[in-house]
Image (cartoon, rainbow, N blue to C red; front, side):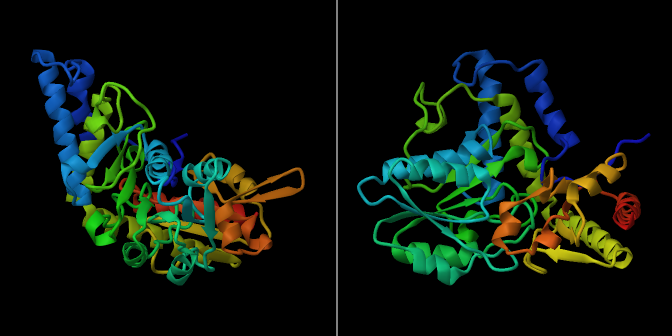
Length: 376
C-alpha cells in the first residue's frame, strides 16, 4: 500500500530538497569548526554567517539580532528564564495566555515555583486573546508579555501588533513564539513590534534540532549556558553548522515563495473543509474563521472520539487529534478547553494541516477516507 496522505504539517515538515542540497557539503566535505582560523574553518564560518543573513532577511531584522538555538523550545526557555534573570531589579511578573505551547506554559510553571508571578489570559471562542485583557493585566512589576503569533492546534492568529503597542506604552518586553507562523504568513519583527521572537526549523522544511531566536538590539536576556562565547556569547557551544545551513536555506525559500505557498496551502485547506462539510452532517470548525493560518483546519465531529477516527483512517491518512479518550475518560486539549468547546464536540476533534506538497488528489482522497470513517 502507498504511504498515508500526510496532513500533519503543524507537527513537522519534510525536508525541502533545496535544503538537503544546501546541507550536503557540510555533511560530506566541510567538517571544520567555524571557530577555527585555518583553512578548514573558513567555509563553515562563512556558511553560518550566510545562514544568519537568510534568517534575518525573512524576519526583516539585522543579522546580529539572530541567535541560533537547538529549536523553538530552547529559544522559548532562553527568553523566559533569561528575561526574568536580566530584569530582577525591575519586577517578576509575566503575562501569557492559556493556549500557549508547553514550551512556554511549562517554563512559566517552573518560574512560578521560583518566585515569579504569572498571569494566564483567557481567549475567546475563536481562540484569540483580547487586547483589552492584556492591557488590564499589566502591572508595575510586569517585565514580559509572551503571546504566540499563531496557535498550533486551531491556527488562530493573535493581534500581536496591537499587543506590541501596549507593551511599548508600558515599557514591557514582548515575545512571540512564532514556530507555527514563520513561513506560513508574514512574520517580520518590526511589523509585529516584538522584542523577541522564536523560530523552529522543522516547521519550515528544515531539519529537527535547529531554531533561531530574534533578540532586538538593546534587549537583555541572561544566558542559560556559559562556554566559549559563540553566538555573541548568548548561546555558547560549537555551532551545528549542518543544520544551521539547512535553516538558513529554508528561510530563504520561505521568503522567496511565501505568497505562492500561502495561496496553495489555503486552497488545499479550504478544499478539504468544503469536502468534509458537504459529506459530514455534524461538523464544527474551531479557530477564527478568517484570522487563521492558511494551512490549519481544526474540525470537531459531534459525539465521536478522535482517537477512534484516527485509528480508522490511519492506513490512508496521517493527522492529529485534539482529544484523547482512555478507559471512559476524555482528555481535551488545553486549547479547546480554553475556547470552551463543548465536550460532545471537543472529544471528536481532528487537526488537519496542509503543506507545500499537498495535492488536490491527496485532499480528495482524504475527504473520502475521513468522511467514510465518520459515517461508520
